[in-house]
Amino acid sequence: MKKVALPSLLAAAGAAFLSPLLYAQDGSQTPAANGQSGQITLPPDEYNVYQAAESQQAPAAKAQALKDYLQKYPNSPVKAAVLTDILGAATQTGDKAQILDASNNLLAVDPNNLRALAFEVYYGRTDADKMTDPAAKQAALDKVAAYAQTGLTVDQGSTAPKGMADAEFQTLKTRTMPVFSSAIADDDMAKKDNAGAITVLKAELAAVPEDQTKQVGPMLQDEYTLANAYYTSTPPDYLNCAWYASRTAAFAPATQKDGIQKLATYCYGKYHGSQDGFDKLQAQAQSALNPPADLATTITPAPKPEDMVKNLIATTPDLATLALSDKEFVLQYGAQADADKVFDTIKGKSVEIPGAVVVAATPDQVQVSVSDDAKQSKTADFTFTMKTPPPSPAPPTPAVGDVINISGTYASYTQSPLMITMTDGAVVVPPKKEAPKKTTTTRRRTTGH
Image 1 (spheres, one colour):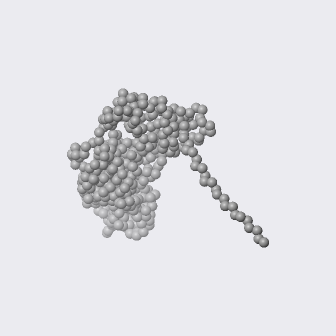
Image 2 (cartoon, rainbow, N blue to C red):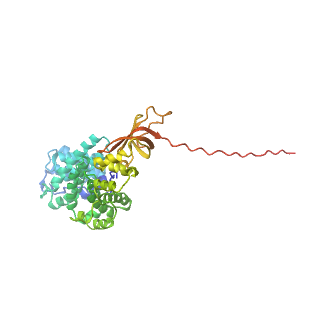
Image 3 (cartoon, rainbow, N blue to C red):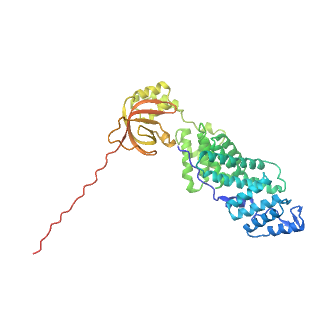
């Protein structure tokens, strides 16, 4: 099974997603009256400039007027509140550059500001997801996770920051916690710290009413991330993967169900060995966020590979009759003596393997995926040393991703990781179909009299 790409279960994005969650409709935070801003008294001249800026209706004009106010009064006692209002106005413009500039300025004076941290995390994560250089992407995700961890620490606090009403703080905690948790999990997954991702996602899901975990949005998205965290763990936790993927599929939009369901089905089959009882697990997952403590005792795990090999060896009188897939299975998971017995039945024999997928290729050597697992993981399980000298005329060297028929002679193998080495390799070019012969119709020439 391939690593499953996460479908987006979020209905909105960007400032359009965060702004309504973090701000009042007008984007303001510090209403002023009678020469005061909140509980802070301003000199009349300064208050008039401040009030004029706050009274602007157009978001861009309001942001600029508040910036002008701070330029004129850089040591204003309401500087943090004004910077918060600038951020609120910037979000209404939808201009990413303005939003991030306002966030940065606000964090410079208020490093624990939840709104600014949320925007830094959201846009930083979006930008990181677009990066193709692994090192640069990881550095960007680490930076985002640092902002997110600060925000999560503030969210976990019991008292509101100075200047914020407790009710407002509780609302912000509820709304920003998924943003921060998801970003930390994303960073953990990129670093293959699946245990860390699982811990933060389960804490996030446990902190909200269960009804929220059934709604299309951040919680459902993170349930699916949780399923993938279990699936890509080392070793994979297939049972928990099946549970949370089934849970997500139950409430996902119709356009996303099939892709998510494939992961659930795959993980259940890998754990149990068949699909028996899967419908029961699906029903359970739909009715509860987390699996029951005794789930592993009610669903029998599939036999271990080494046990399956022993049974296969014991019930196969002639090991040479095993299918290629079964031979590979024994070579990979069997005891050394059993693996050697199976390889002895094919060593030195030539074979043509159809439908191999090229992983790497040079004129002298071709590595291919043959088994289903190798194809899914895009790893090679066969190495062909090509014939020397090559046939004349030599076929072109195949490209990575090509599906080819290839022949060779079994030479040796290594068990972990499995690699079967073949000699006298040759790409088998299927015969060209003869073009249908053209038929001609001869028309008799008539002679007039």
